[in-house]
Length: 361
Image (cartoon, rainbow, N blue to C red; front, side, top):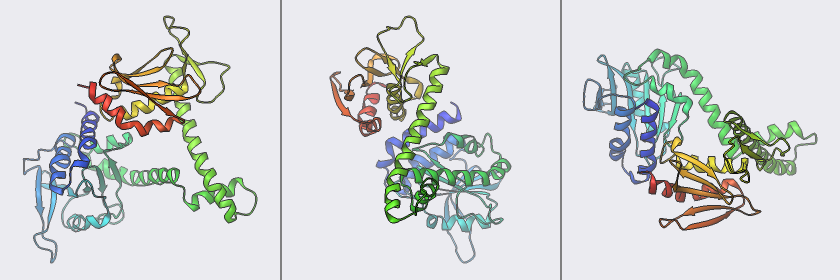
C-alpha cells in the first residue's frame, strides 16, 4: 500500500472514531500508535525504535515523561506528546516538549491529539523548540502538498536535513494558507478595509465598513466558485467534454459528451457536475475517489458507487426551476430534498455517507 493510501486509511478511521475517543490513553491506542507504525513505519513494540513514556531528567524536574521518543541509531530523533482527541491543541500543552527538546538530540517535536499533528523544530534559536509549528497535518482535512514532507519522517525515507531545510518555507506557507482561509470564512476589519479602500474612493466611514463587510464576503465566495468552475471547465476540456459555444459563463452552462452512442436528448450541465463534485467529496470520506462515478439521464443526474446503478449514492434533479437532491433509503425509495444553492448539499452529508456505507462492502 502506498504512503498516501495508508494516510487516507488512517484518516478514514479518525473520521469514524474521533468522537468516540474520550481519553488520552484511548487516543494513543486508536490513532497515535497506528500513525507511528503504519504511517511512519516504526515498530512501536521495539524499544530500539520507539520508547513509550520516555524519561530524561531536566534540571529540577525529575521523572517527567514524554509520551513517545522515536529513535534512530541509538539517538532520539522525534519526540511526541499526546493529548485527548476531543481537545484542542495549544502551545501551553507543549511545556514538556520544550524542556525535552533542549536536553536531547531531537530536532523534531510533535504535539498531537491524534487528529491534528503539529510538527516543530528549532528555526528561531538552535536547540530551542519554536513556539509555532512548521507543519500542521489535519487528518480530517489532509493538505496533499504536505504528504511528501511527512514521508521524509518515515523510517524508510528519513531525511532530516531535507526536512529542516524546507521547514521555514513550510512554516510560513502553512501559516499564510490558514490565515487566508480564515479571512475567507470570516473577514476581519483589517481585511475588509484593505480591499474597500482599494475600490471605494470616498471616506472609509462606519457605514461604508458595514456595507463592505457584506460585499467582501460575497466577493470572496463568488471568487472561489469561479475558480472551481474554471477548474471544472479545464477538466472537461481534457476529458473530451466541451461546453457549448453559445452558452453563458454561469454554472448552468450546458456541456455535451463527445460520445456518439450517448442519447442526444440528455444534456449535462456544469451545475450538475459541480453538484457531483460536492457529493463525491463527501463520499470520499468513506471510499476511494475512483469508486464514485456518475451517469446522466433525462430526468436526473445519478451519482453511483462503482459505476453500478444498483448502488445509487444520490440523484441530482436540476432540470427544473426548483433543484432537488434525491436520497434513497434501504428499499430504494427516493426522498427529494429541495435546495436553492449547491452548498446546501453539505447539510445532507450524513445521508450521503450512509448510502456509501450501505454499499461499499
